[in-house]
Image (cartoon, rainbow, N blue to C red):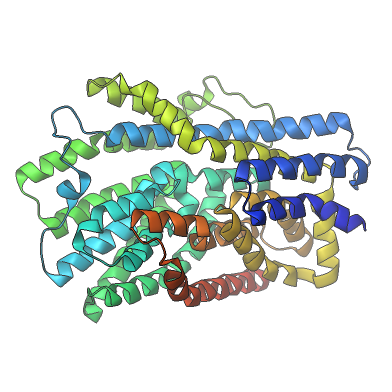
Length: 494
């Protein structure tokens, strides 16, 4: 009976989501409202009282405060930077600047790959919220693909999702796991890279059905590009931290690929450079703040606020969210468009408010369940029953939550504290277990009905979701089995 009571917050959250009648914010509110009395009256920790509850809620609020600027700043910067500069015609769209006009099958195939595996993830990293799908569809919609194929191409922009929205999900997971964000990001690279083999296979199948099949050598070229992307991503994650890692890794690769494939004229290159200049400047500045030791030390020490020693600090001059907001303001002023800032700020809040509120609520829920001892007690009970084999439950459980909630954050808030306790008790690598939890929830979220709905809307594919799911199902099962294989590796070799 006790374990059933401890499960009520999770069951309440799950029931609210499955009902389809409430959004994530309300579901998280219900979960937190249930967690508070359960923790106070039935939690195993005898020290957990109203004061400890207050501290746990404050800790959750602090985590949300650190994460929110990544989400809102990324949205605002993307929207401001995506506006046409005054000296460019509004009709100078991204697809016109970057697009391929060639009728060659190979040229089309390369451009679709460019949109799916480079531009899409870059856009998703800068903002999140499915903007990667929008960027991918915007680039390739003029190529005449059937909606069901365009939907799959759109979903493939979500394949590097642990670095989406300035890695806010990974930073949040690191806070739950009490790990450095850089360490969790690095440990996440391997399972993400292995999953890229699954996503490439899906791309090849869809490309064949869409009439852009190519030779085996071209497929090997695509494998080489993906491998290069993963190596660059690992290097930038180690050097810069996960927030700006994908932007810094993929930015130069996008330029290189654009030049190699498109061979633009001077005017085309200048127009494209003008369009992407704000991103290049921002990424360059963020990279410098992390690579120059003296600059990093100075910025990292001014105005630092650390209310909790084991949680991330707020450093206004070093936080990437601050740079995104300032970058939005500077870009608008330089382009002579300061009047758009108010509207874009409101738009960013309208788009991101549920994600921001959910971050606060899930963080508070996680802290309450951890401080009351419920998360640890669950881990001990499951370990006593299954031993280290418990880790094999991680991919299906976190993956299911990722699919249901379209986010890895709910699963992380509910399971990561228990996973950490389990890893410690079993003698497993805590970063490896946390990375498995993080990647399973976020990557399998690619199959979420919410993302499918967005892809269908963008691709004019309403009514074709069932066909697309039928195509995706084998790949979802292979992805799950691959993650369970990673779990076996963690169990045997860490």
